[in-house]
Structure formats: structure tokens, C-alpha cells
Length: 358
Ligand code: PEP
Ligand code: MN
Image (cartoon, rainbow, N blue to C red; front, side, top):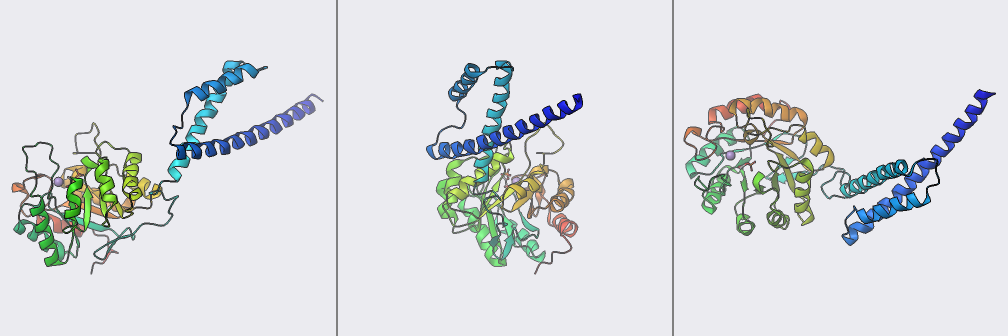
């Protein structure tokens, strides 16, 4: 008899639970609609005055048996979950998101289809120093069957007294050498005002880590019809990285390649800490190709091969690394650049067997 009564009460609880569940989800859909209205009106999602009103309303109408404070605590949890729901909704609609575009973006740079599932290599010196220097690297790249030549002409140096790059003269050298070997030029642009002119020389515009949140530059790069290689800021979260790419795409250019290049942490054994898990996260959350820069992330030549292998294993679309004919005399990043022999060894070790270059 007693156990029968318990069963009945439990049955009632289940029914009420289902009603609460249904009501919570009904509330959730209204919250999503509110989120959309707020987005179009540019109104902030979190409204503390409104939240206070709702909590007061609960206090006024509470007839027990629960304490008002207990109920307010429960409702605050509901409010928080609702805010999260609006946030998720917002992210769902980002142009970079895979939810928005399920298929991979594949970017054609001189016949290299970045994002096609193969590993592509962006190699070249840290900075363009001379025609001969770039040519020697380009020649060895050609021999390896590679196409994507990198080199900095505008260098974002920590110290204003360090070599700042050759500027447009450097871009001209890159173009000349690239044309000689039928390669594509990847080079960093620092100033939005230089972008237009740089288009005559580069095939891929690189936006460096230090400029990942230079919103004017991002918007300018978004207004041109050239692929952009966007590097992760050294203290940027993955979400901030995605929003930076969103700036470019929402300005009209959907040819964006993301590049993980290590982030600042307390660890001193490497120059930066390579956030390897960023690769599958970005591949999952976005439809964009994701590369890994093994040179600037590690800052150590002895780690280039293992980190490149790890990047390939975890699904990167490409590897970036620096190569210099004589790293000892390089004007920047002297310690971390490979010489030609090391570059050839690197390629032998990391080139995936299934990937045959023509
Ligand atoms: C570079 O690739 O030349 C460079 C400066 O790298 P980062 O912006 O990642 O520091
Ligand atoms: Mn460098």
C-alpha cells in the first residue's frame, strides 16, 4: 500500500519534470528569438536591469514551499544557460563556421589546392635579403617539387633597430625569383595602405601574429581578391583567431588560410608553445584550411621534424618553415632557419608517402 503511494507520487514527479523540461525548452526558443532581435538591434545580450526585474517578480510571486533565495538561485542558473544559448547561436552563424558551410574551403594557389586533404609546404627565408639568397632557396624548393615560396619583405621586428626588411624591393625580388621557377609568393603585409600595391607581387597575403587583431588590415585584406594566410596572434584564443578570420570573410574575401604558429606561455624550452590541438579544433569549428608554422612555434631546429610530423598526423593542411642558404648570417631568426641540406633532410622525413609532387 505504502509502496503503491510512493509509485503514484513518483509518477507525478515524473510528469512535473516533463512539464518543466518542456517549459524550459519553450523558454529556450523564446530566448533564441530575443537573441536574434538583440543582434539585429545591436543590443547587448546581458541586461542586468532586466535580470533584476525577473528575480524581483519571482520573489513577489513565490508562495513556497521553496525559499525565495533558493528559487532565485535556480532561475539565475536558467538565465546563465539562456545567455550561453544565445552565444552559441551567434557562433553558429559565423561565416567561418562549419555549421554555416559544411564543406572544406579549398584554396587554389598556383595549382596547389590548399585544403584538399594533402599536406602543402610553405617554405622560404624569414626575410628577403637579396636576389641570390632567395634564388638559392627557391631552386632547392623547385627540386623538391614545392610551389609555395615565403619570405618577409616587411618585417614586424620587436626592436626598431633590427632589420626591418627590404619593403617593396623585397617583394620585387620574390616575384622575380618566383616567376623564374614558376612558384607562388607568400609574403607578409604590415600596412593596409601597402596592400593594393603588394597585389602586383604576392599570390598570398600573409597577416602576421602581431597583426592578427589589426582590424583595419583585416578589413583591407577582406576587400581584395587574393588568398590570405592569417597567423594566430601570440596571445590569441582560438575564438579570437576565428573572429579575426571572420573580419576578412565578412569584408568579402573567403579565401582564408589559418596558421597556428604557437602561443605565449610560461614555457621557455621553446620560443612559443605549439598549440597542436588548435588544428583539429579549427578544422572542426571552421571550414578553412589550417596550417602549422613549425619554425616560429618552436624556434628550435631540432624540433622541426617531430612537430611537422605531429601536425601532419593531427590533420594539418600545410606546414610552414624557414629556410636560408646560410642561416648563420641571416638578418633575422638566424638560429631557427634550416640550411639547404637540413631542408632536404626535413622534406625526406616529413613528406607523407602518399603525396606525390609533380
Ligand atoms: C613570419 O612568418 O615571417 C612571422 C613573422 O611569423 P609570426 O607572424 O607568426 O611571428
Ligand atoms: Mn622568422
